[in-house]
Length: 83
Image (tube, rainbow, N blue to C red; front, side, top):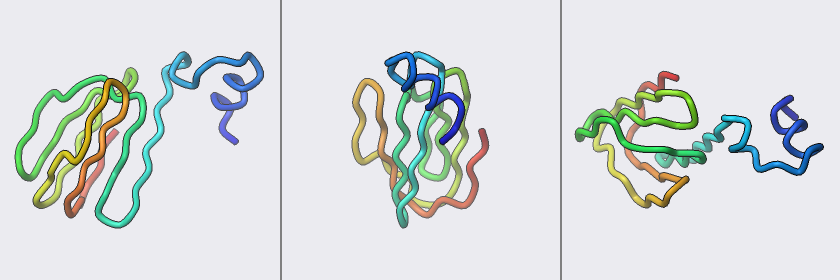
C-alpha cells in the first residue's frame, strides 16, 4: 500500500486530503478520482487537473462518459497519459 494511503488510513482522513489521486484503467475506459476540472478537451486530447497535478491524455475518439465533482470517466483508445 502506498505511503499516502497508509497515512490517510491511520489518521482516518480521506485520501484526497493528502492531494492524492487514483487512476483506474479497464480496457478502453479510464476513471480518475480526485478530479478537479477540465482544462482542455478535444476529440483526440484532454487535459485535466487532478489533485495538484495536470494530466494530459491523448488517443482517438476520447469521450467523457460520466463526471461528478470528484470523479471523471473517459473512454476512447488511449495512446499516451502524461502526469
